[in-house]
Image (cartoon, rainbow, N blue to C red; front, side, top):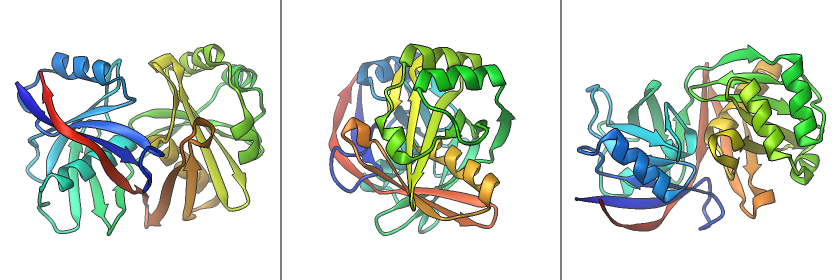
Length: 276
């Protein structure tokens, strides 16, 4: 059994500075167990499988796996998979638009000249217990300057702001303690951000799910965007992530009415055939 395969670097225009996702372009016919086995083998933060849609409004259905389990939604796999589908020759049902079917329902994507933007799913906010905040501050070695909150947009992120981006990049979190704090927060990922002038820096930690630190995280940046909109109203900005991991991802956040759009560039770095 053979399937078309691409490995896409997301949130970058320079190879190997973004976050890779493995995309299997012919996911139909594979069982959930096979998909999970492939995701464990690629050992990337996410591996996706492009399947025929069940909803006639969708261009395709996307299944998203990290090495340990299937995810309902994730940002960088959504953008990377759209790039892989388009670069393989697919023509969207609507010019300039893609509708992706996934675990959170239908997700809209807007296709720019060299940027793909995804309309973030609605988010809900969940308070963080004081004991969880104390545990997390001890784990990262820094204090939050505002109350952190869990932002759930299909994947839940405990999101909090530290004093600056420079401080954030300098932190060396105790990953075992971060994992304990994440489990205390019902399995939420840990999403940190800081600001240096107009630059927003983000770090996303998920050691309890097998990914100590995600180099450039779409859903994590989406959680920051919701957090900031709640604090300040809609503000468009660019964020950076991954510099403490020798990456340099660039994320664009824009607003259109009630919708937050998360965007970034993507490029194929590997392509070929996966033999199963």
